[in-house]
Image (cartoon, rainbow over all chains, first blue to last red; front, side, top):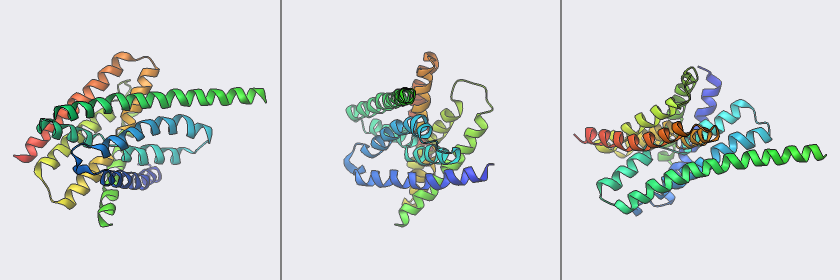
Length: 135
Length: 117
């Protein structure tokens, strides 16, 4: 079961979920467009690869804390179920332009930001290695 | 204040469930991220159901925003896509991307109409 790791994931997810909810409340979910979900999902899509492939390596963060921050906090901070249901609601309401924009921005923005974070992480670590060699 | 605790508690439960399932998934030798795929689809179906059933506010917060929000994940999904791209697994990349988005909305609709019935 890995009790300690599960507990760490749960505690960090507790805060990840609350942050997601708070941002959703702050960005007026009644506005008709799911800005809250879009916002947390894009932040998380950039944040997770950057955390796991740069920050964890660079600062030698231990496995349990990395798991808690990545799988726990950012995993619970972002959500796919709300994305699906938000998109469905726009479709049912025949809001075709917002529907298309929501899916388009989530799809391209999500994978684009993850790729940027991954490439940036590789580049930063590479720069660091070069600096080490020069010393 | 209470609503924050309800959401947080639900998110913790959902995330632990996701973590345990992901651990099982490491035993599956497949390049396709099957576990995250199934987590996001089952979560979308259930949230569709919760939305259609129009539960009271507390249950919607706990199950919908909390448990299912914490259970499903957008960050891991995109991080996996990015890794597939990195490793030049373009067929799996496009398959995973299109199947998750397409089926995600489809099963959410199925859950929604089942919940409403």
